[in-house]
Length: 322
Image (spheres, rainbow, N blue to C red):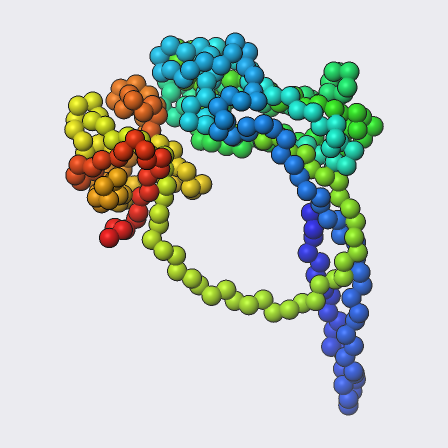
């Protein structure tokens, strides 16, 4: 980390009858450490490519609300079941290890929002092995209750912890184990949004002069345009026979993960503007969820609309776009 160094200004001493000339000190160079680049090592860390790069005990299955006992990936999310399963990936790090100082593993996980209990569990583990396959170091959360909302769980191994054996690490095994503690048939265990494994380079020391104090300009307030929020589009369907005014849509795609609100506007595939009459509700499959679309938000619009099958996203506006 680069620390900001503060300048020390001398006091303005005065002689009786005349001012002492003020001397500006010459900055003394100081040594700061500049971190090298970090590298993300996993294949398909966000599950955007389905199960590519990952393996699972019991194999991967197809997401199901009622009958699955295998882990599955749906819409870039990994789902566990009532049977304890482990999803893993092994990475060769031999080409990075000599110039690196640490490893950082991050698991983004939550439990099912509308599940029958609040005790779904997971274990996140990093196994660091040498060329013989022997484990050099282990980092793990142990069995833990999955958080209610998506949360980053971080494991770190620093060179300073095992200085004599750090350079012998050749592979890292990343393992995530999860189970639905309520033991309901189907994919009702913990949800995983992404897993990252990052190797961080060594630091190198370079002399840098003490910074010269300069006035910091006062930021000029800027106005922001009306909010726009992007979600996964789902084909407009009649919801359990209630008609065409019911809109279903998927997860946030703009990074804000904002909960949609009543009063938002959207354009349908025919450029017709409609407004949400209620705060959307989240359903996790089964009735009254829209069965062709799986998990998603459900809301009522102020009129009929059309979302074509070719639409991949839907944009909502806090104020009317027309």
